Amino acid sequence: MILLGILWVALGVYWGKKAKSMEGFMLAGRNVGLAFGTATAMATWVTSNTTMLAPQFALQLGIWGMVAYSTAAFGLFLFAPLARRIKDVMPKGYTSGDFIRLRYGKAAWYVFLAISIFYGFTWLISMGMAGGILMNALSGIPYQTGMTAILLVCVLYTLFGGLYAVIGTDYIQSLIIMIGIVIVGAAVIYSIDLETVYTDLRAEKPMLLNALMPAAVMAIFNNLMFGIGEVFHSNVWWSRAFAMRKGVGQRAYNLAGFMWLPVPIAAGFIALTSSSMGVNITSPDMVGPLMAGNILGKTGAIIVFIVFFSSLASSIDSLLAATADLITEDIYKKMIAPNIGEDKLRKASSVVIVGLGLLAWLVCMPRIGTLATVLFFAGPMVASTIYPIAMGLFWKSANARGALWAMLLGTAIGLIAYFELGWYTASLISAAVSIVVTTAFAKLKPANFDWNYLDEKIPEKPN
Amino acid sequence: MFFPQPFFKILILTALLMMSAGAITLVGMLVKDIQTKRLW
Picture 1 (cartoon, rainbow over the protein chains, first blue to last red):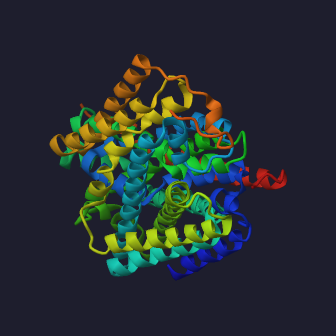
Picture 2 (cartoon, one colour; picture 1 turned 135 degrees about the vertical axis):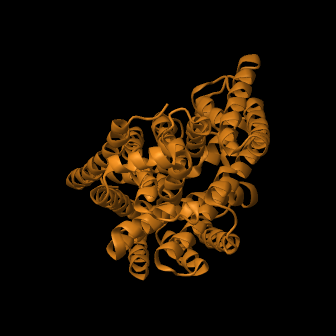
Picture 3 (tube, rainbow over the protein chains, first blue to last red; picture 1 turned 135 degrees about the horizontal axis):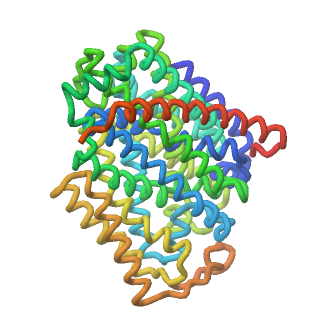
């Protein structure tokens, strides 16, 4: 853990030397190529939630659970054309908040920022918690110590290197994740026959092989919508679209989608072998590291540790950078200090990164709920932003009121569904409300938006 | 109705194969970007 921590911080300092301007620090000079662009999208989307929740999904919802998790890859596939469009219409944009503000005006912007920052912070907490759980499961390090270490390392290298460091380390981390999961998966297949696993599951837990398990089928569509919502609204993905060289974004996101698609299945199926291997699962979100350590012994535990550490770091760094950009650019610069100079803005950005890390650390200290509970609470909120964003980028007729009500009603009704029906329905219902409201407003009171107003150089038009 | 055993096996093997191909593709893209000086 110490060696990996030193490596990431050293690389952060090294790449940080390239970040001479605020644009370099926030957007890596807007000239990122295909290899780094693809790797950063892929690695960022492989979070602790993929490597730890996918086995949990497999254990609770069976084959459909793994496939359901895989559908989150469609977030990347569907964002690909948006990445191209974003680069075309907002060549000088900085954040997803910029788009909502310029496209829909201030009321929708405030709601969007609240959703986006809440989601970003929830994601950050779920990963900080995952870091602590992982360290504890694999090496017995106390939860608080492990969680503190991973947050500290990520804060340090994001602070020194900005998006250059985030994207550079993401490349190495994406390779580690892919190679590591393949090694662990191959070792599992080598140590136990898949036919035996299937036969044991059929005898002991037949529900996991049920092709018509209602909750699991619902989870597919819910996860699909949650995944799309997460990617479409989050500044993590928008900042990468702005950072990639013109012509790279669409290809990079498509390639990243194909590379991500198999990860939940390759990481999740290990949980299904637990019965055949005679491993007792004490906590569902620890099933991944527990199984890998059990099958592969000490060497395997080290490989898994490095893979998990990389998947956590690749997402925590992106999230710190992107959420800090949102707070610095949209709240501090646009609302509080519009005439602030570049040096002061850079300092403010550093303070925000440290502050976010500190706040996440405080919230993570008591281990609250399971990872799924924490994460899926944000699902209906982000799903409500899908259509205001997608339609706002392509339809001139999408209007401000439609966007505002789509986000408010989608979130409210989605949250009611979360509590009354179950987490696996919330995002789906929220997205459905969002599309109906956005479309209805666009058809009944169509706007005639001039795309040129998305370019920040032109004065803002009242919407 | 249960997923058939071959489906279970093919699903897992395909996932591992796709991940291996992904890692190789990523290295190939890096080499190309370095050669054409289009890394960043």
